[in-house]
Image (cartoon, rainbow, N blue to C red; front, side, top):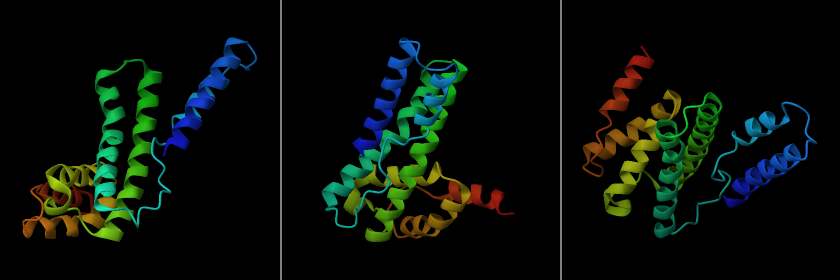
Amino acid sequence: MKNLSALAVLLVWVSFSLKAQHKLPDGSWTTMLEITSRIADVDSSLQIEHYSLTQRIALLKQLYQIDQRYRDSLENGSRSASKQQLFTHKMVANDQANQVLFRKLVDAFGWPTRQKYGEQGTQIAWLIVWHAKPEYQKRYYPLMKQAYQQGLIRQNPSQIGERLKRFYR
């Protein structure tokens, strides 16, 4: 996880250093920012199949922080177009990485329930699906609906169901 973020920071630092020394061609700084903005803050290649429940809960909390990081920046950060674009790219990259890791978690351990992951864990699960494209939502909507009907989660999936109805008319 930290390796990808460290790589992005290193690329930006090298680019900044070269730019300061006037050794980068015009437009290279923007190109480097563009490239690094598309690198997620979490490594989606993590193998989590053997994670303990404690590790899985910690992973979900980390995914939530990553999910919210650039959304907060979009709302409360700089209004410059370039920074807004950077925040948007980071948000998309992180959403995709979160969804890969969440898929691995659900495939290996089932849908997160209040009994195992707590209320916060089930809210994070709902949020990851909410921020996904309809194809991803369609995959998890039945699991969410079943867990809700069984009282295993409190998050009503009807909002996602309505979105899917509009998308798949």
